[in-house]
Image (cartoon, rainbow, N blue to C red):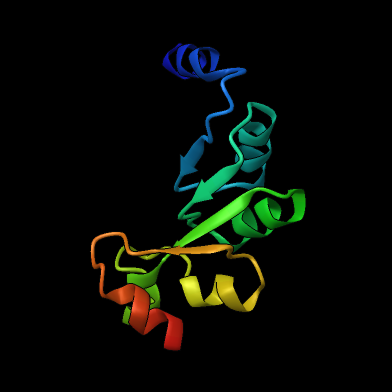
Length: 104
């Protein structure tokens, strides 16, 4: 019910909406159907690839790239970059990681 309430409040307002930690391609598709056009930190390669395939922007964490992988066992952001499934890097919890990640 909360999801529907939020989606209804934002409908038609031209405000970008993002999901967080998408796991499954079906989740990405459902979000896109609901007007959520950004996938922030998808946790699987399949979810990120589906987002890229259907034109949903993908945000990955720069600290994930700097660390060489996820601190919680999720997909590596570098794997997503190599697969062509990342549009934006976010600093997340380590702002200087943006610069280092760009060079990596």
